[in-house]
Image (cartoon, rainbow, N blue to C red; front, side, top):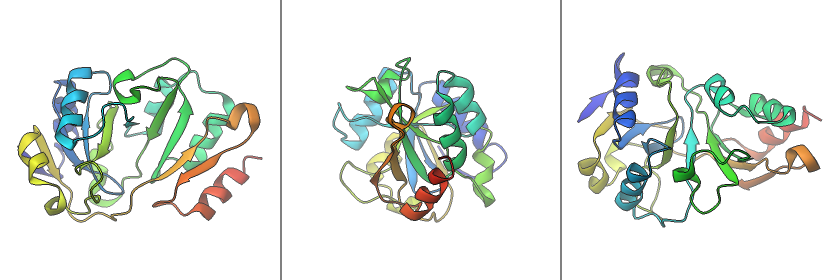
Amino acid sequence: MKVTLDDEAAERLRDCVTAGGVAVFPSDTVYGVCCDPDNEEAARRLYALKGRPSGRACAVMFFALEDALDVLDDLHESECEALHALLPGPVTVLLANRSQRFAPACRVDPSTLGLRVPAFTGALEALATVGVPVLQSSANLSGEPDARTLDAVPERLLESVDLVIDGGELPGTPSTVIDLRDLDEEHRWYVLRDGALPRERVERALAALA
């Protein structure tokens, strides 16, 4: 089913994911594909549709920072401060997954969790109330370019998922990936992939915590 962003978009996405489905949706960076991060069967289906290597992790996306902090209640103070400085925003942060949550997303490295909390503006704000986390990856075939528009999402994905949400044209640059796993004990962090949030803005945000 293909729908546009409207007042019911968040409810439709939530219902699809909680029912075990797979959806294509717009984010603050590129189009993504998502499912329930605790549903291994749904995760395997998503991986198969993308042709993604089975051991490669996906991020878990929350649609509000408060929801993420409520669930990730074992984060240390320095990590919470860093998340408040960076999120919501076009970044993926790697955290120590002390409680080994969301195994279908973490795959072969249950000690690490990738976290996304998008910054929704304009029409995309319709998705801000989804209220449940999702396992998410870019809506492309593994190794292929990211999709800025729905037309750029491979037909193989669009025809095989349970829900498609059209969010129009997106910025098109994938998220910046920041490793915070050494933040608490060693007070260090690393940019692993340059992306939508420039490195200098990451440095300014995290330097303010020192």
